[in-house]
Amino acid sequence: MSVLSLITGASVPVQLVMLVLLLSSLISWYYIFLKIFTLRRTTRQTAEFERQFWSGADLKDLFQRAVNARDSAGSLERIFESGFREFTKHRREAGVDVGALMDSTRRAMRATYQREMDKLESSLSFLATVGSVSPYVGLLGTVWGIMNSFRGLANVGQATLSHVAPGIAEALIATAIGLFAAIPAVVAYNRFAGDVNRLAIRFDSFTEEFSNILQRQVH
Image 1 (cartoon, rainbow, N blue to C red):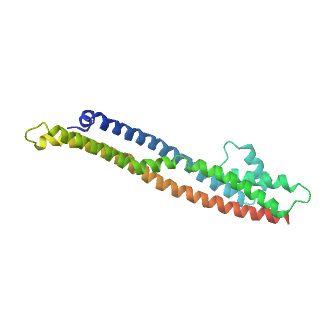
Image 2: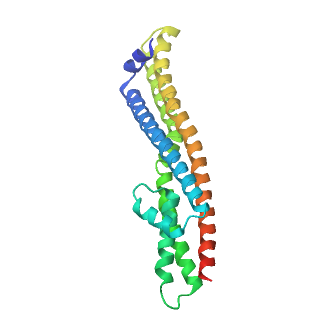
Image 3: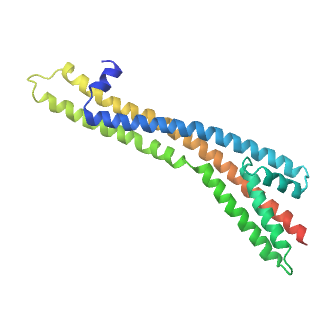
């Protein structure tokens, strides 16, 4: 009645359910650790760039630094780079309208913002799916296993607990594995969704404040 013997002794459909849940759990943990490192790095890079930006550094120097370190630049630095590039490109045009210039600059930053948010939100949908579906997949394996167990009792003259217990225990392992896959995925999803939302607010605030700074430079 060890856990391993219950798994190996389960019927093939129940074993397939367990295998799917175990693979889902392993992939979830891979994404969890990957997302931890990604969000920590993005938060650190955002704080560092905000410190440099608000310390009064020259915008052209910040832009050149962002261009030179494009591969290693943080999300906020890329948003700044796209906005400042668009601003300086159209500002040289003769008779440029201030409203059109700022709209173009905001659109450039918004496009980069969307790309960066897509990167930060990647794999969150997988964690949400595993967290919501895994218990039901495990329950499917449990129901199938219990049905198998009761079908086997049809050939037994007198059913006792010793006849029923192994089959039900095998079936309940599927539910346990489903919960094992779902709980970390749900906890991680809620944590990461909150972190991504806080970063999105910081990006939005910076975009508006940077737009105001650029608009004052035009006048």
